[in-house]
Image 1 (cartoon, rainbow, N blue to C red):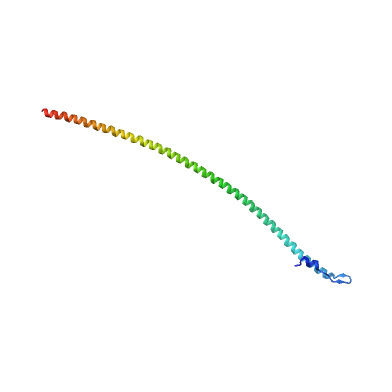
Image 2: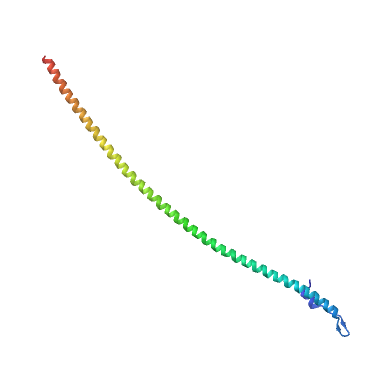
Length: 145
C-alpha cells in the first residue's frame, strides 16, 4: 500500500517530450487502486461505527429502561414492605385485644366458678348443720325413749 510520502516523493523520468506516460499511468493506477481500497475500507468502517453507535444508543436506552424498572421495583418492594408491616402491626394489635378480652373472660369465669364453689360450700355447711340438728334431735328423741 502506498503511503502519502511515497506519492509525494515519487519522481518520474523525464523524456524528451516530458514524463513517461506509461510510468505515470502505472503509478496513477496504483494510487487509484489504493485509494479505492481505502475508500471502501473507510466506508465499511463508517458503517461499522454507525452500527456500533446505534447499538450503544440501544444499550443506553435499555440501561435507562432497566434503571427505571429497578426504581419501580424498589418502590414497589418498599410499599409492599410498608403494607406488610402495617398488616403485621394490625394483626398484633388485634391479637393483643383478643388476648385482653380472653383474659377478661377467663378472669370473669374464674370469679364465677369461685363464687359457685363458695355457694356450694355454704350449701354443704348448711346441709351439715341441718343434718347435725336433725341428728341431735333424733338422738334426744332416742334418749327420751
